[in-house]
Amino acid sequence: MEQQFISELPANIVFSAGSVKSKSPSNIALIKYWGKRENQIPTNASISYTLTNSYTETELKFEPKSGNDFDVKVFLDKNLQTNFAPKIIQFFERIEAYMPFLRRFRFEVHTHNSFPHSSGIASSASGMSAMANCLIKMEKLLGSSLNEEQAHRKASFLARLGSGSACRSTYKGLVVWGENKALPNSSNLYAIKYPNQQIHSVFIHFHDTILLIHEGEKSVSSTVGHQLMDRHPYAEKRFIEANKNLEKLLPILKNGDVFAFGKMVEHEALTLHAMMMTSDPAFMLMKPQTVAAIDSIWAYRKKTGNPLFFTLDAGANIHLLYPDDIAKEVHEFIKNELKQFCEKGNYIHDQVNF
Ligand code: PMV
Image (tube, rainbow, N blue to C red; front, side, top):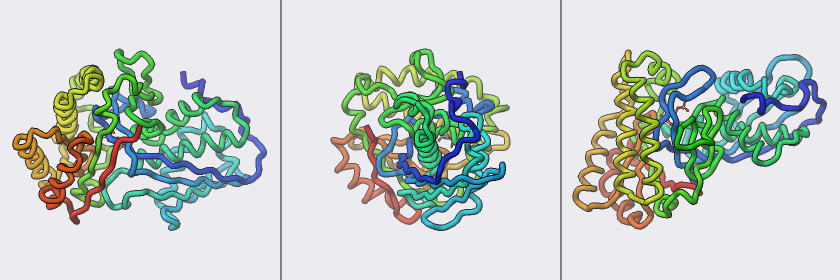
């Protein structure tokens, strides 16, 4: 299966210097990926919304070189980041079999995130997706004959090897990664776009406001969190449930039942964090303000009947999910109530990207 992604270009390709650019959005999972096998194979299928305002822009500059080492410099907002290069080199090692010419070039990666680096929003999904897109563009410049669909699929395949959830950021809309029997084209190797015709219009115009509850580094990285699922007492049950939850969500996406959607999405978020709390060693990424904000969201929903829901990624921040017709009211609620739970009163209004 992976064979289809091996470049037809020779390792010793001769080419002059060049540069390619890509912009890639972040994504937020509705059904969560938590747990993986070797080579970034997910232990269950997941589905996410691709966002609009939270993105990474990357320029990849390359020039021919001699020698057999990887040579990469990474600049974030024009500043050289020596601690980023090992991550990119590790990525290159993982994808070398599919891009055999990488050692022939010296690389400069110039990258910028639309969200502040310290915001606690993970840049790995948008960052690795932008990087994978750049490499596909480079491969095209070097003469690859991939058609658009093949190139897109390979970009998602490569992004997955950079950071699992990044493979979903290579497509817009709702995106599925991981094999699930309800979706015969789904794959563990790359993401696929969930067809827009299967989605009720209410979900095409959804908002996501990110409450920046805690800025800065997480106490436990996603890499460690995934590993702790390997010997987690509830892991197998969780993987089965996640796939079932995805199957249950698909008809909801079609019929537009926002309350059934919200119930499922909140259940997934809390299950993800319950898995963290029941890992050995246990860890908790929610902060007291995360819990206080959830209480406040639930009270608001009870009082107003408005379909305002939350989800969480692997961190303390809250993603508020809500349909377009209540956006004005929700923005007032955020300003008047939820803002107090944000570390510096900061939040980011985003929208799903179709
Ligand atoms: O792609 P990673 O290794 O950063 O893991 C992401 C895991 C979650 O964000 C918690 C869930 C998901 O499906 O995106």
